[in-house]
Length: 623
Image (cartoon, rainbow, N blue to C red; front, top):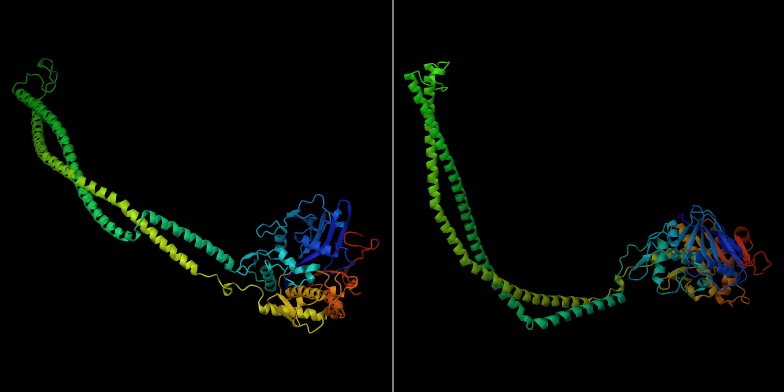
């Protein structure tokens, strides 16, 4: 059993210059009864308005003109009570903590809630109430094609707030009588009987939308085909020849491409050869420069070697002379004999002479090696000098060949440049032909497609099995109320209403329709409670016991035959007994013109609108 529920605690009208008009309700059964035009239907209207209804209370009522605010206290689940405030003129809501009938100074946690449902914005009344009931983000199919929208709390009020007009209506208790909203209303009933929404349904395009879209696409295809045909006629007078032209052009292009590639490859090879020979020439010139530098250095080195030999030879000759006559200038220090203080020995002179001879031999060897190197360099220079003219001759020949090939390459490239735009133009014409054919095929394919039949549409609404189970619940309720007859109830798929003992409910008198409508709505509450299905667990019924009216004083007039049978039954007594027994299942607000049985005064919250100003309670907005 689901624990989410809403209990209406009070309904209060306030105005700056008017006495507060207040109704207090309790869990279980609440009965407002009394004279006509005392505010019972206005109470129903105000409750619906405070649950997000778009129509404010009628401003032409003299009594309501003194009031500018309506307050409705709610106990939602087991949470702290809250109060909704809304101007009698309409607009958004204020959500106040606790049960209040006026604004409390210093209160900071007052929320503003829009009256318009928005499934993604939490600051609206519908979102707030759906979240409390655990019904957020549920999807409802609104068309036979499966088109969906989000569940709104206004969908739920259709199931639990029944005004005087609706309760007597010949339409289904779950519909407002508008064919545009019928699918959505039936989807809402299915959700409450199964707790399965329509989120998984993939919409199918309906016939009208499909045909409109198809016609638009066909027109678009026709426009595109006509445009292509006009371009072909203007630019390609003989379009059937385009394919042969392209074949010839492709062959010519292939040949020209081969010629151009061959010419490019040949001239590319010549450029590679020229580049390679040029590198050889650069290398030879660089080597010649290096040889000249080395020869210059080696010549200088040779002169140094010669100078060293001459100096050493002089030392060797002096040593020889000294060995012949010691009275000579010192060969070592150059001193004349008269000033020499130290007499060098003949041994030192001999050693010096030998050292000079050895050094001369070494330098002679180095000089010989140097001469070999010089000769090698001169030979290499001569070889390079001899080769250069041949290499230069070869590179000149290659340049001449390049000059001969260049016109062929240029001609091949020009021929390619000339054929490409012609080929591209022919290809464009062929693309137009191909595109026109493709569009024509698509148009023909679209033309053959038909709108999806009813068998392709999703199966919406209540299944026959669930409808049968629910019908049995209604039957049990009618039997508990001692409704006349066998109380055999069957669901009618066409009207989404019920047959009772083989007779469509809508074919009964208005009093019988009111009672059976009430039975269906009460049964929905008990069915949901038994099966753990969602339901706000409150029910507002305006004049369900219309059958028990006084035909002479009631605006509804004489009773029909089936109403007379019902009026002579004990249904009124058992109606209240059954509702009182459901105290723990939900809250019931009953508006009636007839007096309830005496036991109801003890077991229910009863408010009497006498219509007399001097009585305890004359009506809703006056005492």
